[in-house]
Amino acid sequence: MRTAYGLRIEGLDEVVELDADSCPPVGGRPVTVRQRHVAPPPPAPLNADRMVRILADGRTLDVNRASGSATFYGPPLAADLLAHPYLAPVAVVVNRWAERETFHAGAFVHAGRAWVVLGGRTAGKSTLLAALAARDMPVLADDIVVCAGGDVLAGPRCVDLREPIPGLGLPTRVVRDDSRLRLTLPAVTPRLPVGGWIFLHWGDRLAVTPVGPAELLARLVTRRSLPELPSDPSALLALAARPGFDLTRPRDWATLDATHRLLGAALTGSLP
Image 1: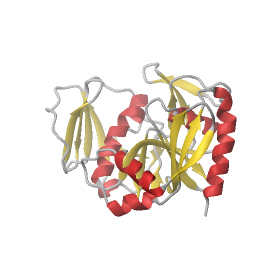
Image 2: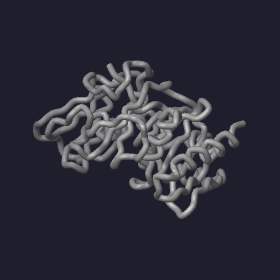
Image 3: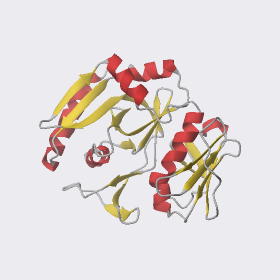
Image 4: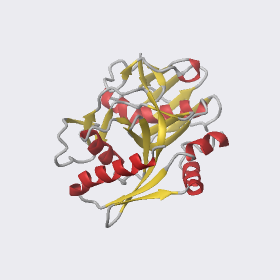
């Protein structure tokens, strides 16, 4: 049995990016991931027990709470694709059913805490995480961040890049039908307390600026995954009580070292 995103996962023993069983299961039972190359069930809206939806590539995903299963209908997926990105929608649904908050984000570790990195699809989240990993800041998650109470849960042990990073100094391999370069991450503590929030922006100069609590709460509310499911207001308030920063940087590989130094100084200065 493997683990990621706080799930105990059966059926993915061949996926090397998932850790051996080390986390308690969501909802008290494992999730079995299956693949079937047969006609899928019709789409169905998300409810408290089941979700069936068509994915961007035409496959259908059926997540069934009662049976503890997540079934992909369509051509078989390779192990590297199951690690990322196809496990992410399963993790979002199951964790939201378990009343955990999830965000399209990544997270790295600084001073024993998880710092969550948020931004749009081309905001450079994975690039920043890979650069931080190369500078000895452990990466906790890429693509999806799951918050259980005040903790962030570890994701699959990889970061996928659209293009090479000059001077990265860490080995990568081609994955996802030759569309990505995968950086394999070492094992990490499976859950760590939230340190704070970092919102990525592109700009002409490098800067880190604080985000006030009210603005931070508003941003977190709008960036929740599956907002049609209810959230605990007190849990969101607790998450928004952590520090928040806007990180602006130029689209220039040469600024990665300076970004690392500036970010480290800002986060160290925010520690209690």
